[in-house]
Image (cartoon, rainbow, N blue to C red; front, top):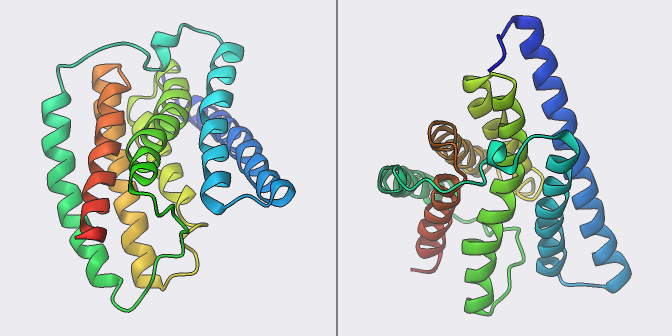
Length: 219
């Protein structure tokens, strides 16, 4: 692991941000073109963005170098119970805060009505694609450069920022609650990803947050 200095940290964060922007911009552009050229439903464009996150992140890992294990592609189940309990407890509190802040407001997201498709998108596609992008590519890059704490905080902030655009039409109280929830998820997922070296805890944290949110929205 490399020695960390302020200048080294700044340089690493700048490069991580460039990686994030490259993948994020290309993915959202692909989604926009899909919606424009194919007149696709919003959830289809969203799926294109998610799959682009996954494909472009893996391509970037190959270009940057290092083994896929460096980016979390390894099996470690030692922290799955802890991350599950932490995620369920934290998401339950945050979902309650979101529900209070959302009084009288409707979600700006256009999600599929098919419950099976909705569950696949929220509980499988989003956790895998977004975590490979944020906790795999971005966090893995920072971890390889010796920045343990930054590897948790930076991707968590970026993950929260990603949710600002789709939820921008909502009021400030609800937006703050949603971004805080995304930030909490990012920190939990990032911490367990860093200490375990595996993406599995991050996948699971994301799954539980989305499941609790989905259950609260429908029940």
